[in-house]
Length: 175
Image (cartoon, rainbow, N blue to C red):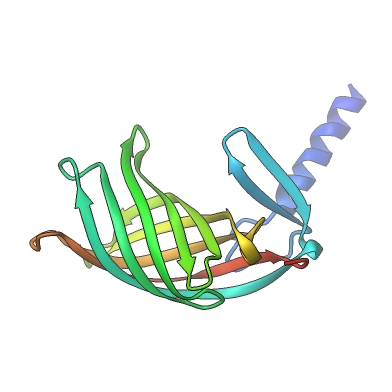
C-alpha cells in the first residue's frame, strides 16, 4: 500500500512539472516528436536548437466536396525556411477538420505539419494550430508548433486564402 501511495505521489509530481503551454514554457527537459499515431519518440531538449518561427502564406483551394475534402496549394515566407511552397490536404474526421502537408523551401528542404486544432474566433477569422512533425534536409527530426490565423474567401473560384502564423521550431543540433 505504501508503494502505491508513493507511486501516485511521484506521478503527480511529474504531471505538475510537465509543461502546459509549449509556446510560452519550454523549460521541460524533454521534447516529444510525433512521427505518427504509433510512434512517439522522446529526445532531450539539449539535442535541439529552439527557434521562434513566423509565417505568411496565401494561395488557393482545390475543393472536391462541400467543403471537405480539399487540397491547399500555396506559397509564402517563413523564418528559417525563406520563400516556400505549400501543399496540404484537408479532410473531415470524427474529431473535425484534419490538415496535413508540407512547406518546401527553395533548396528542397521541407517541414511537415499536421493540424491539431481548428476554430473560428468571434471576428470571423479562422485559427488552425499545427504540430511540426519532422521534415527533410535540415528539418529532419524537427518538432514544434505553429499557430495560424487567417481567412478563406469562398466566394472566389477557386477559393483563396491567407494565413499568418507564429510559433517555434526545435531543429536537431546536428542538422
